[in-house]
Each structure stands twice: as C-alpha cells, then as structure tokens.
Amino acid sequence: MEWIDTHTHLFAEAFSTDLDQTILRAKKENIQHCILPNIDENSIDMLMNVCRKYSMCSPMLGLHPCEVRSHYKEQLHQIENNLSSCKPVGIGEIGIDLYWDKQFKEEQIEAFKIQCTWANELHLPVSIHCRESLDLVLDIVERFSFSLHGVFHCFTGNQEQLERVMALGMYLGIGGVISFKNNQALRDVIQGADRSRIVLETDAPYLAPHPNRGKRNEPSYIPLIGRCMAEIWGIGIDEVAKQSSQNAKDIFALH
Image 1 (cartoon, helix red, strand yellow):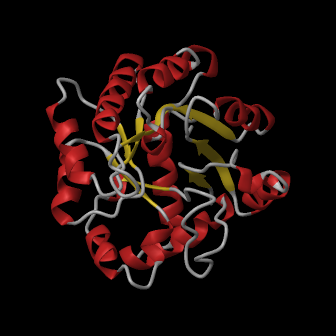
Image 2: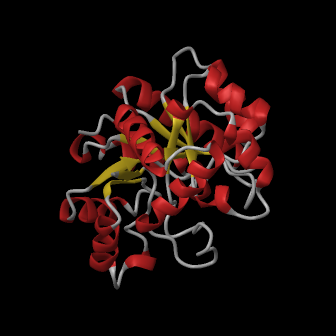
C-alpha cells in the first residue's frame, strides 16, 4: 500500500531542524512521493534544495496568491526564469485568496491568469489555492479558451461547486479538514464525488488531520486522511491508497 502527498511544504521553516526524521517517518508510512508547491520568488532555492536531497520529492513552481504584491509582474518574471532549469511537475501554488487580504485582489487575478497560461503552454497541471474565492476562480477557469488540468487544492466547496470542478475535468485535493469533527457537510459532499478525481494532500505544516489537529502537519499523516476517506466511501483503506495514488500519478506524470 503506497501513498502520495500531492501538496506539502517540506522546505518551510517548520521543518528546518528535523527534515531527515520527517522524511523517515513518511517512508515508514509508505509515502512514496511528495509534491512541493512553491510560495514566491524567494523560496525557489529552498524548495529545490529539498528536492535535490530527497528523490521522493518533486517541485512545483508558482506564486502563492498571499504573496502577490504590486510588483507581481517582476515576481512572476523571476519565477518564470526558473521553469526550464527546475523542471517542475506542475505550476503551483497559484490562485486567489480573499480570506487574509483583499488589497491585491486584481493583481492576484492577473497573476493567476498568467500562470494558468504558463501551465497551458508547458502542458503542466496546476495546483489552485482558492480560499474564500472558489466561485471567482471557477468563473475565471470556465472562461479560458484552453482546458486547464490540475487540482483544486484544499477543496472545501459545496455540491454545486464540486459539480463545476468535475465539469472542468479537474481534481479535488483532500486534506486534513475532511477529518475535522465540525465538517460533516464537506464529508457529505465528498461522499458522492468521483473517486477517480480525488488526490490526497497534507498542506504540511498546516491543517493536520484529526486526532493531530492543531499540531504541525507532515506527510506521514496522509494515511489518517486516507482512513477518513475510507470511512466516507465505505471501502477499504488499501483501495483509497491505490486510487488516490494512481490519480496523483496521472495528474503529475509521476513514475
């Protein structure tokens, strides 16, 4: 039984003192692969250092919406200059975040559109962050003249939003929030989701699943999310592992 963590920030400061041990714990839990989404133009070196050191880690490159500033075109230019040398498996983490700060909303929208264009031109999937902005992001993606491929990261939407994602042929990234006791509504939505469109993710070091909620998250907790999904779907955890891992391989062209 193998697992893939499709979204984990192992290059974050939270792992600076025990990354070797974190990787060992992940391997012990049969995590075969970790995909690391970038944050901004300054995190690329840290991200790539981790990917070079640990063969189970692969990079994505992008500008996180919370890091978009007035000089976003310069930020994007620096990231774009690294695309060919870093050989990312996807463009991410990109999107729109209207939870923390709406000051740069228009810049976030433009940065998102530009990076989706990269993904289309490079035939790469995207990892989309859409906190408090899912309908807006869906509106934008539905209007593209090209078909976008990838994952709606940390999906917490309703039934209508799930159907819109499915209609686009995209995938849902399911993380620790699915296991929170106060999240039955999300579990009800996910219960009816197409199993071939689900991937698992930790978003480590954030959003640790129950019973570790509030603690630092890490890839070794992926089976906890998988166990929750098995309960929701009424199937064996080995089937969840097999399906979600195959979905991740299909999206990110992992071997």
